[in-house]
Length: 106
Image 1 (cartoon, helix red, strand yellow):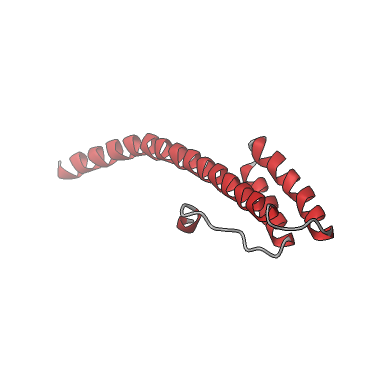
Image 2 (image 1 turned 90 degrees about the horizontal axis):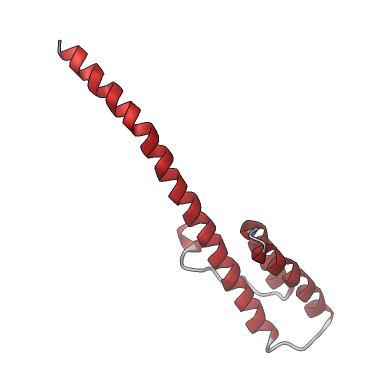
């Protein structure tokens, strides 16, 4: 009798657990997307700040082109790709991309 009750409870818990797991994964994805969008904005601002104090050279011209691609990727919702491209633009200027507080949690 006890085994029947325990197995019924276990079955009910498993049945209820599956929707809970699916529901929990959706906000995590949304959080990740918002996080990547924030990092895109942070890197765009870092690049803009760096360019405001640098003279135009061959390196800055190449970095501007890479930055433009990164901005287009970020603005079109391809945040992960945009973050990588923006980091490349900053690396072209020999700058270390700043890490946002949220990025440190990854």
